[in-house]
Image: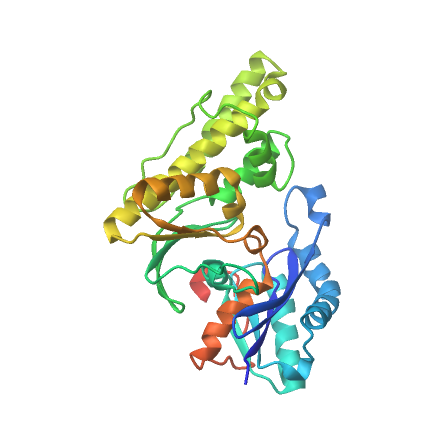
Length: 340
């Protein structure tokens, strides 16, 4: 009998539900929240309220698109954390209630694990390339920047991580300061394609080991723009493409320097990326370029699997289900990775 998993994702500002059958994706529905753009960032209370309004129609649509009746489900996977506690509470509570109503087991999933396993989502008619174990995953998002060694679907080791800002956070904060809007990553990426990445140079941190730091380069950019605009108020408007291109290149250089170091130290040549920043065109091109130069086998998730989505929660839940794991109904969501 086929294993059919419903995945539910509600860690931040996207409500998503997906259905997979034996690892193959049947549906993946996402309801995005536009209200946060007016505030320059996600407002937790507004996010949780939107999840409450969205979760029933999103799950219903995912089941309908998949052609699956609720009673046909094998298990219900949901994001337990990390993320916004109010948002997580909506998804967790819904998964519990649905599990009780259908007499189906529930399976908690680490949101970051979902990003790490996104390349294992299979689709009918697709190539479905999957990394071999062990592999390294460069996990980059608005809240996390990590290099993770993955020895099996359920075995991970964090080799390095940011000690301050995440790379996505650096994109967002600097974009907001420069008046380019929120979210900052897509805006800076678009403008960077039009600019000269070698025109300006920003500070790069020297952090030992495989850990990251993005606070210094962020501050370097902010002071640079402030000082130049004091001399010419139109400096930002005249040079925004080159500024974005140079800033983005600096961030990518920082990410890649440590990833290359990790690959050398471990001898691992299977390399993946995941998380919202893995949609960045400059980073994707650099990963592929370094892969060709260093004879890596590289795996880039499809764009629809880079942002928060339930397909990655469903596939992670599928692996947990196969391992015999089940989650008790008294489980509570957690906002921090350290509490998972």
